[in-house]
Every structure is written in C-alpha cells, then in structure tokens.
Amino acid sequence: MRRTTVITIVVALIAGLAGIALMPRVARLGAQTTGDADLAGAARAAVRDPSGHRGLAVALVENGRIRTAGLGDRDRTGQPVEPGTSFEIGSVTKALTGMLLADQAAAGVVRPDDPLGATWPTVTGPARDVTLAELASHRAGLPRLAPDGILGWARILWSNVSGGNPYGGQDIDAIRSAADRVTPDGDERGEVHYSNLGPSVLGHAIAAKAGVAYADLLRARLLQPLGMNATVIATHADDLPSGRAHGGRASGRPLDTWSGVGYAPAGVGPWSTAEDLGRLAAATLAGTAPGADATNARFREDQNTRIGYGWFTSRHGDHEVVWHNGATGGFGSYIGLERATGRAVVVLGNTDKGVESIGLRLLGVPEREAAEAAPAAPVWIGAGLAVAFTFLGGLSLLGTARRRELDRVTLVAAVVWAFAYLGLAHRMGDWSVVPVWLWPLGAGLSAAGATLAVTRWSALPVVDARVPWRRLLSVASSLLAAVLAVAAVSD
Image (tube, rainbow, N blue to C red):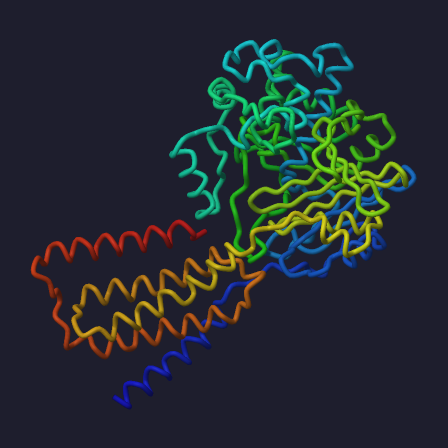
C-alpha cells in the first residue's frame, strides 16, 4: 500500500510538471508598436491590465487631426497590429445603421415616424406598427434576438461551447419572418431595451425601401463618401479582409469569426479599421458625415444615459460622451465622441476583453470612472468552468478507483472523462481571471487517479453487472459523449 502511495504521488508530480508546459496561455498585450508613437504610449498607459488583451488598434481625433496607432499582435503568430488592420466591430455597426436612418430621412426617402409596415411592406405581423425611430433607439418592444424556439437556443449554446458563429445561416428572410412572428411587448415599448433584432429589422427595412441590399446602401450612402474603403461586411468566409486580426478569448482560445446577412445591420459580419473609424469619428464631430445628427440624444434610457438613432450619450463626471461599443465572440470595439472638447476616440481589440475603459481614458475620463463605465462581464461563468472542470474529473476518478465494487469498463470511462474534463477546462475556462497554475494541479490529480486505476486493473472483472450489455451500452454512451465534448472545443 505504501509503495502504491509513493508511486501515485510521483506520477502526480510528474504530470503536474508536464502540465505546466501544456497549461492555458492567456492572451497578453504584446510589446510591438506601429503608427503614432505618442498615441501608442498613451493607449498603453490607459490599459489597466495587459493580461487578456492581445492586440489593439486606436485612433484619436483632436482639433480635426486624426492620429492612429497599433499595439501588440494581430494573431498568435506575433504579426503586429497596424492602424490599417481590420477588426470585427460588432455592435458599433448599430451606430452606422442609425446614421443610415438619419441620412435617408434627410434625403426624404423615409421619415423616422414611418411605421415599419410602410417601409417594408412584406412585414405584415404585429411589429408592422412600430416606427423606424423606435427601432433605431431600442424602444420598439422587440426581444434581443429573433424568437427561434428550442433549436435556436440550442444553436446559441452550441456556438458558445464550440467557439462558432451563433448567427450563421440567418439571412434576411429569417429576420423578416421574425418580424412577422414577434409581438412587441406593450410594457417595454417606448422604453429603451437593448435589442439586436430591432436594428437588424431597421437596416433591412431602409434598404428595402431604397431597393438595394443593406451592405450596398451602407457603402453608397456612408462608407464611400467618407473614404471608408476598408470597411466591409463579411457574409461568408470569402469576404473576410486579408491581413485581418484574429479574434479569441481573453484566456487565449481562438474563436471563429462571425459572418452573416440577417444580423449584419446589428453587427454580425462588419469589419473595419482604426483608420476608417477615425474618419467616421472626425466627420461626425464636424457634422459633415452623412446622417451625423443620428448622434443627437432624443430619448432617455436612465438618469445618466440617453440615446439617439443608434448612438448613446452618457455622462462620466465632467465628460459627456456620445458612443457605441461592440463585442463579438473574439473582438471588442468602442467609438466615443466628446463635442465639448472636439475629441473622439476609436479602440479595437482582438479578444473578448472589453476596451471601453481604454477609450474613455484616452478622452480624459479619470481611471476610476472609466473602469466603472465598462460593461460588467459575467466572469463567474468562465471562472467557474475553469475551476470545476479542472478538478471534477480527477476527484471523480479518485473516488471511482477506490470503490469496492468496480469493473474495468467503468474504470475506463472514469479515466477518459478525467482527462476530457481537463480539455474542457483548458478550452472553456476563463483563465484571464483564474490562476493558470490550477490547471497543472488538476492534471496531477487526474494522473494520480489514473495511477490508482492501473494498480487495480488486473484484479477487476471486465464487466460486473447482472445485465452486461446494459453496462457496456452505458459506458459506450459515456465515452462517446466525452469524445464529442472534447471535439467540440478543439480547434
């Protein structure tokens, strides 16, 4: 017994040391710098914790002058971020969609108070009565996402596990169908309740009124007049910009890009650069951008925040900032304008760690207030997965290996799951908030359990059950689930 204990401890220590070489590699803002050196230095100083960031592209507008810089790496190979590197911009696109509404209203094509049904006649459900202005300001009473039943939620859950695109396959017809099926919430209509469905419906409705696709209307009315030639909407993989940043979790896990047509007006598929968005910010501040008055606050969300057409206006101490942010699976973005000082900022990042506080710091907002203004991320989910999965398999295996009544097939399943849980912890855990040295400890624990399993192996029957085929079927199902779970989180 003493010999077995010594062997188990030695194997656990060896596995733990080996686990150090294999443990998760948290993203960290690289030392490389491109573009304006002073701006890069200011941006780096505004980053409270470089852990969780990989690369950043920034633009700062002051007195009509646009400066841009890149910091860190655009991918895991160490290629530097440059001011012209493309990033997914996510929900910053909602601000562009709001500007399209303001532009088309100024051109007399639509009116903000027009009902959706008059603008997009193929929408015949209850949502046909909501107005374009309500859609642009999240006041239409529509849900956050299109109602898609159990299958829709299962798709979103699977994409979160696999790191895939939760909006894949949802085209314009899917959005129009959702607009037909949904009934605006009477209690929420007229109040600001953030929605991805509403701006998507708005963008496609305005485009339908103009007789073109949303991407074409955006390009013709906003992007081309401002010289934003690097801004594109990727509807599939072939549309992705070359030399783009690669996105991932703050914990280091790479993720698929988001692309699609249906939710494009809300932020699925658009890519841009700090240079392009700097041009947008400068022209919007100057009032020369098409639809610039979309930034005017028209409706109140709460005591501190108002909203125009897609653009929010918030006060941070002495600073009043017009802004929008964005977050996709592996990217974060922020654009903010301060009319009182004539300054504007753009920050783009290629992990899911927020960049809002960096933008606010570059606008002069004190560090404490900038940090408080950043959206609160539910870090406990990723942290919980990291800790639970790291130790669950090893503890379960140790318990199984010490059972009196045991057979080989049950022990095999316990061993496989012990190491499968390690893989799940490695890929799904948020190691930017949990100490990474916990993972090698979990590896050592699982190795200790496997060692005990080996010592008992020869004395165990193959199957110890009254109905052997049922035990075999149960174990086979468990092994298949373990294989599928690991495959889902693998690159």
